[in-house]
Amino acid sequence: MKKGVFAANKKDGTAYFRASISFKGKHISLGSFDSEDEAAKAYNVARVILDYAEQGFKSENEWRFRIDDYSAKKHALSFEKWVVLINLQDNGIYVRNPIYLEKKSFLYYFGVNDFMRFDNEDLFYYSHHKIVRRGGHLFVENCGMQENILNRYGIKNYALKDKDYFFVNGDDKDFRYENIEIVNHYHGVTRQLLSGREVFITKIQINGANIVGRYSNEVDAALAYNKAADYRERHGDKKAYPRNYVDLPEYELIARYNKVRVAKQFKD
Image (cartoon, rainbow, N blue to C red; front, side, top):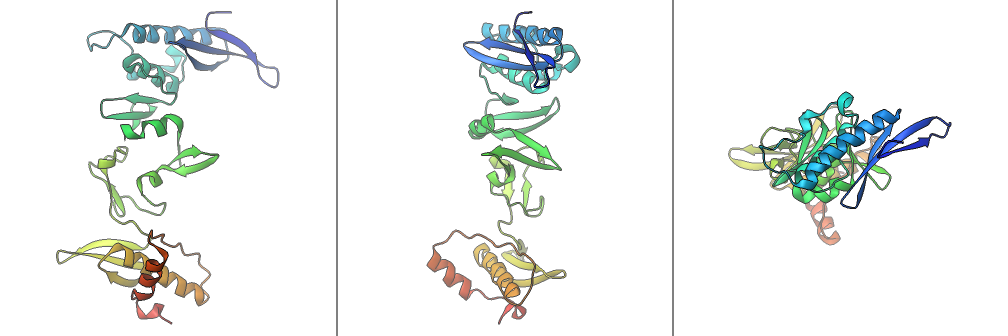
């Protein structure tokens, strides 16, 4: 068997080959392959990359593989493993997910020219949680459940980009905290400037948008939505209205809920 290659069998008895490599005491799996030759090719490419990592060639003038050199046919490795190895080559740090470290941020790769940018403070999280893209949404696997990564940045599931939140530099793949600005934190609440004054307008959907009221702060606007939804449900509306969670002591929450004014069609 060629160096770095191991034979194995699937449950149905079909033979396949695995490749792996060690670097500074770290065992790195390179994936599974249909043939010994493909597994060996992956090992040999990984060996070249890690030889550079071990020798510490950091200069831009020194030849070395780069992420955009990737070719599945030529290198046999999956793109994910390629990124892991190139990061190790350039930065000397092993990260099991397809992450490439930069000075103040890191890139999480899906393809050669397809990546997201995050702050370094998120590195530990995304090193241990793989991002999955499905139907235009981004999820991570967490304790057997899929969580929308927008929630990590304080963005609600119902929030609309460029209405409830936006990316400061216009790049919706740049998830650095400084680049995310949340405009509306609560369901049914929209912030607007009227005559230079900040106003929070609450609307509830009942055969179209119905105005519940206008408020000087987000909390009262959010509670007004809850109050209107409670009224509708008390009077037989079967629609499952979401509720806004407001982080206040219970006594203050009840007092503000009772005090907040709503449009007359939502009053008993």
